[in-house]
Image (cartoon, rainbow, N blue to C red; front, side, top):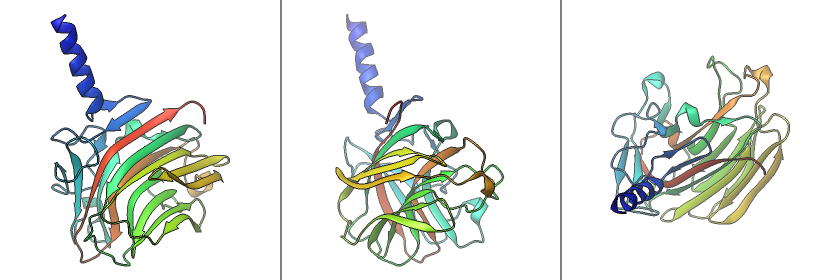
Length: 249
């Protein structure tokens, strides 16, 4: 009986920690002292991400992400780009024409800089095998620019704003939830912020093959900070990430 109880306790711990990375459900509550293996570290420099316990959405820990002036990954050195992002590992990328839900919580401190610098805090990008596709922007992105929170959508040369608010979001946790099907024909984008519906879009939400993208492509998720060069140090927190593949919309 003691052995059975012990096994049950271990299983419960694994479920509430950040080690669930199956094909259908991926969860990270950032409860372990090191970054979970569902994240690729190639989109931030060493020291940009740490697990801390002072500001959390749930549980005892959350991830703190810091972007300082000049923080550039090797691939982007000498450009105007600066970033500190968590990137989902390739085995968890979304497949075109399949439906997924994503939810995550973000916290921008009250002193987060209010500047006109282009800043992306979460994004879904379409895989480009040769790194020479056009356009090469995120198909879906959450942005924070000059105290405006935006969700943008782009599958042509023009970018569309699906949601925007000028309300000061700093100092409060933002609970995002997206239900997505990336498709060149019948895509879906539904989104909620703090349990309030903010987006209900149906239509193309994947770049066409003419831009150099493969047929039945994959889409990868990143969150943190990606910006044009700026003199400000920016810090935000992320917690309670969950991604699930669903069989019916």
